[in-house]
View 1: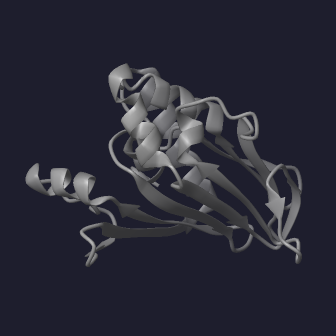
View 2 (view 1 turned 90 degrees about the horizontal axis):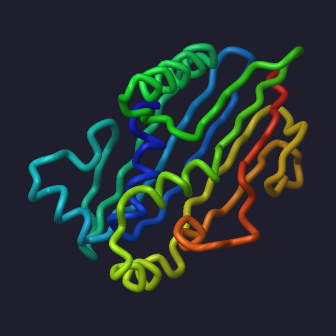
Length: 198
């Protein structure tokens, strides 16, 4: 989904926020990718002052505490999502921006789809974003308690290095924002899950 994962890469460096990212494989043909992000008041104010839409591809709601909720959802064929991600990689290879950086969707033999969220790549992108070292202490304080929560759901989770639900249909991982800017041995380099589609 255009910009969805891109937001999750760049926002940790500019505001404290929480984000929930869900990927649901309905069958062998279709899947839904959705995200719910809550931007902190500072970041929301900066975006509004710049004249940009903080939730261009979704439904945005200002909250009473000054924060901003953005819900984005897209249902498409699995093959279209794979093609979109490949286009993003080709765009990045030619010097452009890959809005789906760190995300891979692959069909496997049989009714199986493999999804990979490359957390090492996201951490590298965060490290290369040019954060002033003098601001690191402020970021560490702002990120305390904030997280990105990812879930992948399908007919059956065949393999995952995340946490598997009791019914075997959902895999999940919680990524503390602090883990994006400082060493965390508990965070794997990838969140990998194989889903049975039918």
